[in-house]
Length: 438
Ligand code: NDP
Ligand code: HSE
Image (tube, rainbow, N blue to C red; front, side, top):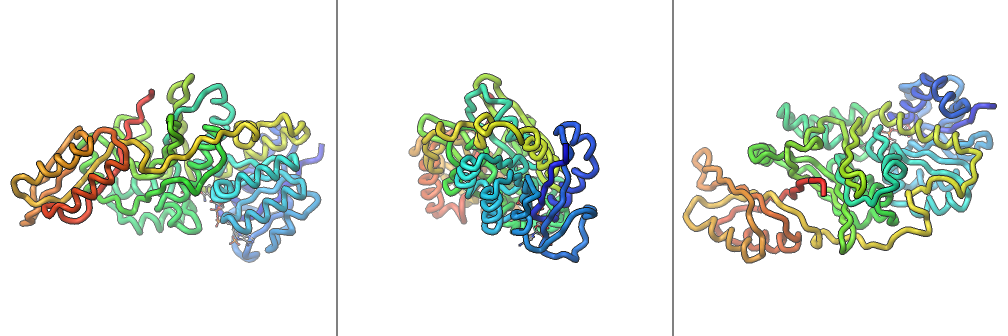
């Protein structure tokens, strides 16, 4: 049988890595797919830029439309990024009856509902394993491996750049901007690195995971997002004194009232495996009712780890090229006419525990006022430590861990605490999760 011809949009970090993996492992890949897979057409912006891959035998164009219009191409791999041009190209490829593989989480999280509907109508596949957690086959694991379960919740470190920054800052005392620059040089960061550090990229990925875990439409606009830029060295140190690590987590949970969908820095007990996932590595902890907790770990970004997921999707597509579209695995795990309308909860309706840090005047009665406010809001304290004033300052740091409470109650309590004249500045609040198997 003739090899399947593939077109690639984008020859940067992931595009270059994908060409390398397809070329280096061509023989093994053909044995798995049942046919050879060759890249014949690719698009990049700058035709003179040096590439990390060989482009021998590939027609390179600066006009990506030429690739999606090429009648020889059966599969288009979208690795340009962004959600405007990429959306148009993917929709056009679908219209032309081509299967699509993408690593673009922004595209899927924001336009996936429309894209999958178009793909279903046309009988083509849109595969997106590489869009979440780099090389970890987490989409396949949840969509197929855990198909017998009711997924109760999942929590993940799903941004490699953010985890790399937090790890380097904690272990080597490095400066935030300096580590971010290195992550960009290593090809981990998004074109706009704000997406990494402000949690937007993780929210894109979490939106996708929530859909395939719970069978709900993609609803990125309802995700709660808080980044890592406000995490201070002292919070990292105090958390460790209390037996916790601070990780930037994406958490989604099914509750009686709706679905939690949130990304924020989170204190987690240091004994949890996921608390020890460092550097660019990602991990996703999934709790299913039948299987219990399962943990998936691997590189969350980078050329070849991501290419591993892209190529696996291409192999999957080639394997089913001739199968009846009705008998394929649904894009979002659940049949399109069986999606649930469970609402996404507002953050103020989410229950979680908290780490609080505040600067207090070092005088009698201050703590009593704070604990009274918390008590009035039904918030009970699990641990409290006071750090004596340093270097002649008249202020001490008070750190508290609370039990679980509604975010709305905590917002009100923090507002009242901040209005006390014995408290200076803002109260630092970091959410806390035990991540215990239920
Ligand atoms: P890069 O910036 O390294 O690559 C983007 C590629 O697209 C470049 O080759 C660029 O051309 C090309 N391109 C951009 N605009 C155009 C255009 N208008 N016409 C033609 N070509 C264009 O990005 P990445 O490889 O890092 O990321 C690609 C996608 O993969 C993104 O969606 C990203 O979120 C996702 N992703 C990235 C991961 C990573 O570790 N980097 C991991 C998982 C997903 P040129 O090279 O000439 O500038
Ligand atoms: N910028 C992303 C990250 C790439 O650092 O996780 C992988 O999706």
